[in-house]
Length: 177
Image (cartoon, helix red, strand yellow):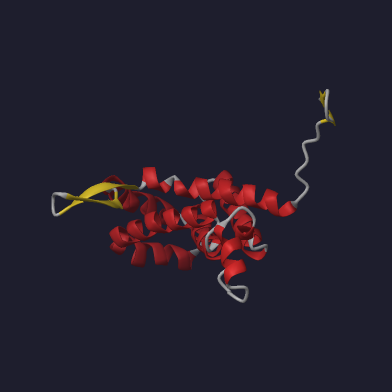
């Protein structure tokens, strides 16, 4: 492809930090979808709107966990699902929904992206261990996410095209970025 005034047009993006920012943003958007799938506007006291966890997600959570626990070959994790998560499924449904939203926001805007990557790593590890026995595709997807989050954490991905660049400039010795 050429431009008659400037010569050949080159599409070049050789800066790895920019590609990692693209990866960070896309993974962030994937987790941010929890805003529409797990959260909804609910009325506090019947009249004050606020963002809350959808009752549909809270009702679905015990079904999902029971299926994940049923034949889970990792016995200690099966016991955790049956003895801790299932009896407290409402609390875990809320933590998962808000955790996914916070990870998604953090990665999408690149603000405290290291913490967001650690949160995503934790969620993905748990999703992988809970569902690995259900499908090889699930196993591969969650472990791919684990590796992606580890890389995003290690390379300080929020410093390219993210608010972490400003935080690092403003507070150079901060451990947060």
